[in-house]
Image (cartoon, rainbow over all chains, first blue to last red; front, side, top):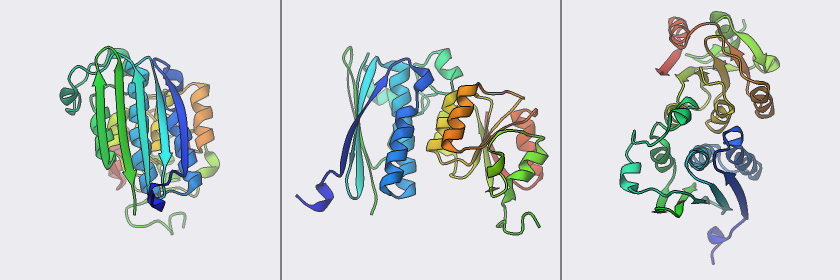
Length: 145
Length: 127
């Protein structure tokens, strides 16, 4: 195992579906943690944007999720595993502008079909797995040199 | 001179307050040291997350707590609510915790962007 593979921090966070009042707090907490560790500002920004979009997706569509944060010396890995309806057509969901959001979600400034594309744009590796009726898992990584 | 240290294209936040006739809801003491280059106007937070540059001022009509989280994660410098819309106290509290100034202008999003552009500021709008 090289130094780059060593996990410096692993922490789990719970995200609750439909809880708009607190939607965004997990991303804000993670941002504070990463700032304290001293990760480059640009990497924190990209990761925070990805985390916030992922968190709001859980709030809007899923019952609950666990976000697992793993910090390495030159990368951060995140897994967001939710219990929820799943995505019937992942390829379609990745198209910018495609959305199944309700009016309420749009009135809150989300659900414009940009969430998943925004996560992909801001990360160096992005994998999405989904099973209808069970849930969706996102895995992404942001690295720096 | 108030803006003696401003780089080309930057304007002091105090001038934005003056141009847009803003009321400062929180962060009065942070405004004097704040120089801004660009504004980004949108009601869709995903647009802000996708297209805004760090340090920009967020101009929005969305007064939920997610507007503060958006400004925080995207490293934006201040939030300006348009149309005289005032956020609820929990939104203030979140802005204070994140040390992000919160302002309100009676102008609409369109009027605010136009006024800032007339004063040489970049103001991208995605209403």
